[in-house]
Image 1 (tube, rainbow, N blue to C red):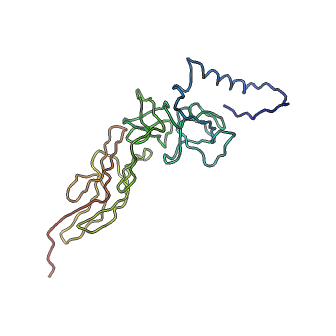
Image 2 (spheres, one colour):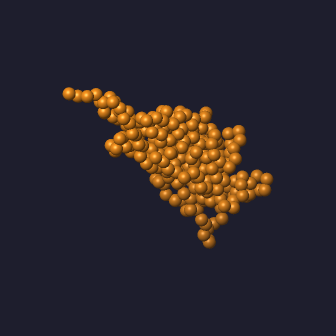
Image 3 (tube, rainbow, N blue to C red):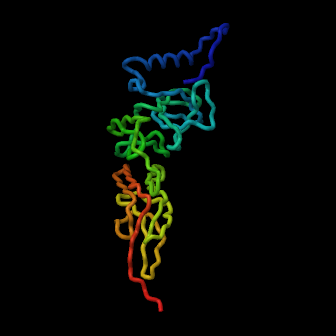
Length: 263
């Protein structure tokens, strides 16, 4: 919808076709048989926004609030979703450049879904689709690639400590945060790493050679043993990637080996 400034007493009345049609659209959307949004508004938080980009934003698309824009009356500027760490919502209707519309930031909203899992998060490379997994908004219902998610609901507790696991839907990579390791009492750091997502156990690894030297600690998907301390798990099923961080503050390796004797 377009933006129209307020009128004041004494202004000459001038019929406006665009304004009249916008009002009709609002009234028609409240019709009992064609009501939009699809759900009752009780408990839903919906704000007025406008498209602050040069491209059309389709209904059901995730958006961030634009830091480069300014408010237009009570309407907030939005742009295509790029950052899950910043406030975001889902636009209700298609928005052409500078057009106004509604954006749901809390409550049920219908979206396009891919993959499987109890939660769904926007896909940075395609904000019109939400990827299901273990993070994001709870999935209330899903069928045939469509579904309803509940924005603002309490999702799983997000862990961001040592060896925290996360999945980048754009690069399709498993990200493992840096952490700490104790090797026979020697305390060292383990660098963060990106891995190809595959089903298995994520381990902090280091090996002791025959002369008593340790290899550089690294993170990889491996079988837990004396050299591989488990810090998380990854399960891949089609497009769905399910992660579990074991919340390990320190990976502890206690290894003994026969060292060569130097005369």
